[in-house]
Length: 271
Image 1: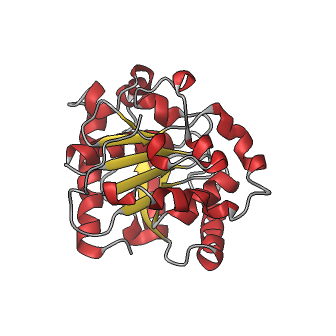
Image 2: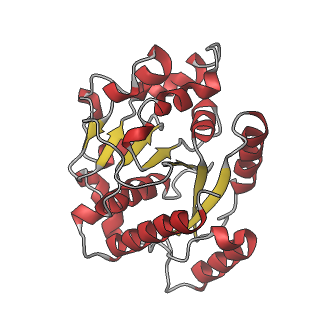
Image 3: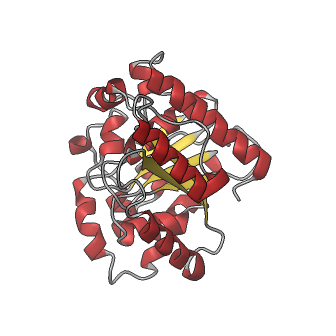
């Protein structure tokens, strides 16, 4: 189903975030889905692009990926127009370009493709005028799908869990961002670090948060995302936390985070 065309509701250039972390299980998809829903609640038109073959962002927004006619695989490998795969979800102003298991083979199939790193950038360019925010949920690897996400983005958002080895893999991600900056996307910036799975009861969470803030400075959002059972439960119901339990700590935290990131953009622009 094609999303209805509509002009962007806010002034200024759309912001395109690649949500990336080389490690799995760090709350990347949880942040993409719930932040997208919270931004949509602010009146912004938000597109979630699911680049992960596991399709967790798609199912977390209520789509049955086994019944989809088309997915991002068709956009990247078959040249299908982006607008033909975008689906509306139950949250007003929120849309998703879903993934499918077919994407698992895309890393190999893209290798011989012409302009293989820019497939997603070219696709998003055809629909970007309809949205204020695009959130690209990158897979937990640094292959061609993630390179496509970084090449298409204007900003990188890195969720970091406040646990042991929090910064493991982040250094490699930063090196790859630097490679993409130098070779494919000179305007790309790492603008946003989000601390997730924060447990205020433990000294460890506080210590890790302090370390991350010392390392990344003002890139780290003030709002942290708490460790929450309700956040873990919401995807199994195909709902973002703002719908599943709108008064929970997780929902409140993501709404605060959405406001902070939107305000940052208004104050400073994408850089």
